[in-house]
Length: 184
Image (cartoon, rainbow, N blue to C red; front, side, top):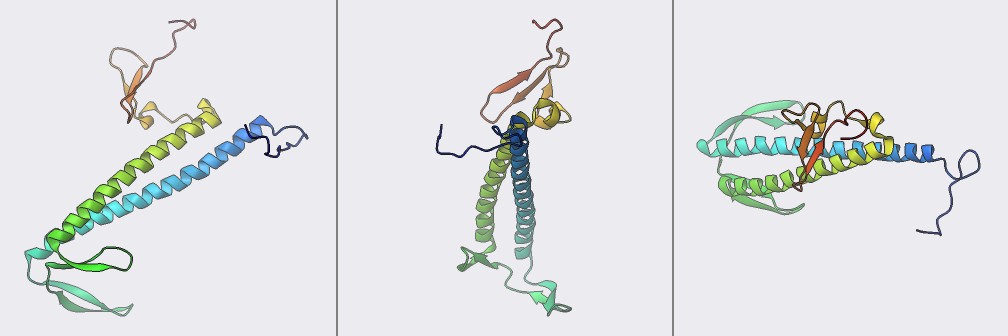
């Protein structure tokens, strides 16, 4: 335990009130949850853009030329054509680009989408972890989800009120209602 940290004083002049500390912790966790949710939304948007791009890359080489409306300034468009439909300028890094075929560009896109999927899984795991920490800090009753299904729990047939969930590491979380009288 660090002894060089200054003590925080509460309103009554003593140690920081435990209730206030938990409120502050919940507030910090809420802020973290908001940031993680924003990241998840951004990754979902990028995944949708990737799926749309994949459809376009599959469609382009089917024709020699595609009719399009070419932008001419911010307000004007004129009809034109996309030619050389099997040539795609791909971004390798922030300042490096390479001319690729649609097949090569699709391969690059697939690799980036696999990385994006891994990032989405990491963000989902972080969201679950922070949500559980928040539940601990706020108390079970305040932060309890609307249903066990929100956390991935499923009903156990034949056992009323019991639920089971398999986590990412392969452990089973089994929940059963407490028997009346306090013992099982």
